[in-house]
Length: 311
Image (cartoon, rainbow, N blue to C red; front, top):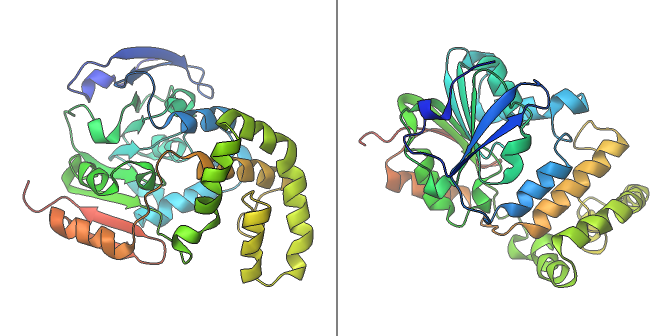
């Protein structure tokens, strides 16, 4: 099976090229890597190797990821027919599997080794690459959609990362991105309090073993306590029973909730960088860049923008 090559998009030679067999397609796929060895997203690669299927709609039987995708871009995914997409932070492919079904061409980029387990590998309209958003090799083309969800707060410089996203959008295209907001508790949120403690006691690997053994009993105990606690009081459980609990938020089975909880607990407590921004801070960055704001959702910290008027 043949398809577009990384040489059709990237104007630089990769440091390595790895041939991977798509786990869904069964077809070989070349993944170009533009990074050297260890990088700050290493733990994300480990996460997606272990939990590569849990957020895939095609596996969990929901449309959670599709709804997230369409919520951010602001229109049905089918409208991407004939369009080109650059996905930054593709991970295991929860959104990539939709992009390749509808867009003409998809370039999926991730800094971590998660790109090597992306579920869309082998699709004949996919070009996957391992690259750093802040050190991207030059590209030969601009894109109708540049998409980045759940990524920017985990980069060392989110403002600079936002600027980079706008380098690759076509004049008539759109950038759709989000970034975590600080939250009502700010730096008093449980993850900021617990992170240095957890990392002092555990390595990533030993904490994963802890979660594999205890996440289920912790969550089941939380579920028993839940009906007896008022809404805001439940936040106390995040400090004493620190496993992410999505019961009531996602239409998942209990086993899926447990797996999702493990994944996001690791994500929260072992991310190298955690740099949230308020909506106003993001809007100020966009103003400085001269980007045209299409829309902003202050509650969700979603942003749709167009290319700067002058480049």
